[in-house]
Length: 448
Image 1 (cartoon, rainbow, N blue to C red):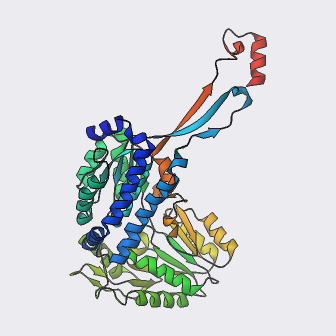
Image 2 (image 1 turned 90 degrees about the horizontal axis):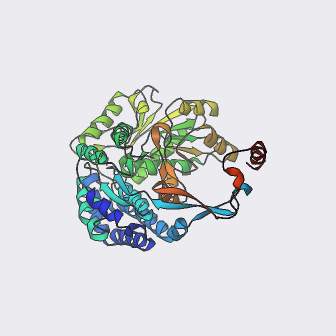
Image 3 (image 1 turned 60 degrees about the vertical axis):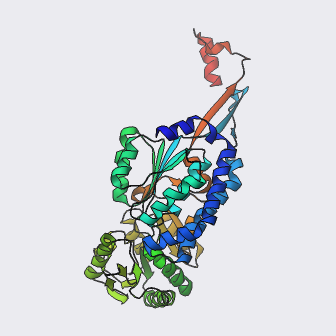
């Protein structure tokens, strides 16, 4: 902390040139080290090269490119109008770096969800300490080696370790901490940040629902749901957690989801999709063993390879564990609803999700679902794509998180918006100074 505080105190990170250099070097890191990044992701998560590029490399690169392109405009003072009583004068908001930011990365997208917040921190002119997830050890070691080679090694430090290291870091007192992960750890992060009054951005998760109406294009809906659900073995915070299908099209939708998964998995692993570790594997295997729903596809768990077959469960009981906790694996429950009111009530009876996905050809229905179901974000007729739009803020609400970043929203989240009012020496209205006569107070009441 002393080292990065000194780097920030030097003032060099405030310059636009420094920020642009760091962003260019981030892009260069991703371009030049793609092979090593893909190998580390394969080692940690069994991720294919294509999924490594789609999920971690290209998405992080796009964030850095977008920030580099728009940084000059983001850094400009924002002029603000004044009321007549404040004339002559001028007012503006200027963005200043917070200082030293702590980025606590997750294991499921250990490059994207670690370096993307770092992009925001650097664009805002901050120094940073990065703590990659110990559950993705190959990627953590790679970031610890590569980041000092490409970025300002005095201003950006990578610290490896587990939960104890995270607690020790938070005890140092940062100007902001950004954590991506589960709600249980999120509560611990928030508690550890409280003694030093460290502001936090928490990107958590939850059970993101999909609602498919009777008029939806079922072929496209099935492909998009199956694609994102299977990506990274379902270990994605914004993956569709369960599907609510209109009773008139439920069976057809299930058949099409099953067909889409079978097509996507033709060249996949023999045992199914690899899960990150034994603890997560055991949790998912328990969901499969205990469900009261009908398994329409998959259902096999292979402990030797820590693999779960992509699984579709039709109409599990709402009290099943698979419907009570965020799944975070390649298991997709599909439930039936009779009316749209029923579907809305079902979702709203549970904690607010990180995202909601709604498939319908009726504009009014899509907008109604967006308006009546609280969620961190929403997508109509697709799944998870809002995460890849830097013009949109990405974040949760309620139990799914607090704060948002990406694009300008990340720049602003990790900047201090300083309000500035500039006045002239003259005129110097004597009425505002004591002692106040009755006439002076009457005039001031009219002015103010």
